[in-house]
Length: 323
Image (cartoon, rainbow, N blue to C red):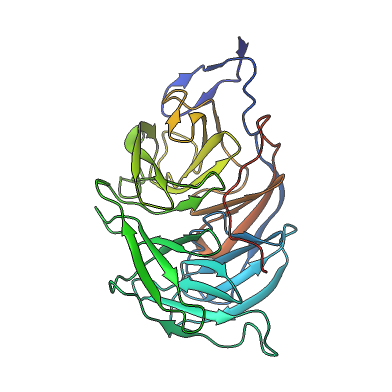
């Protein structure tokens, strides 16, 4: 067995061992940042692995939505506040759909139009929920209100009107879901650790794998972390979660890497690696494309990092590329 470097998960120094043959995502190396997006206040929230054509889609709560390259350049943006605050964005067809801050779902046309990224309109949601976080497989939209005990909901999308029609809802998620991601394995992944104290170490929550075609939910077990968990991603045969810790007993804003035994189970509830990305403190959003990692935080700040790919075959969840 090979000895991994020591790291702090809480107030105590802990040594973890990783079996030979598993290679965790490497420690992130800062490439740029902080880079501000938008001209108004608020945090940049859930990226949810929403990558299209090598660019990430994001949203700043008191500004609006944006598209950003791997080098940090913002190539498109749309100010939507104060009409609609923005927290999460995904691409379906010719439109980018985005959530308000407890204020519904909207969309803007970004392709096959002479005026892309120029206007937006609200869409109807069949069960009337005010979604705050979203992911997509390129056809359906999956989301949650991020309220305590709220579930994950799946919606089909009417291409003509943008209307979202409920297809299924999970049951049994007890905590607060914030970030989620869709993976090409056909599963969504999330953790209900979004409501714990941001200044406390050693918080616990449960991780879930959700079948995207049916909503069937597998509880993958309890994990331990600091602060709150705002983002969950799958990269290859690993799950990565990101915290927003604000206390003094551990590093602020860490990423925890867990090895998967299968699509719906962990090798163990202990992370195979924990990293403290440079410069950033509270982590609110994350996305990975190839060797690039985007992270977001308060004050409209975004950051870019270089990471290695896992040794296992890559199966990342993201918005589908435009047709």
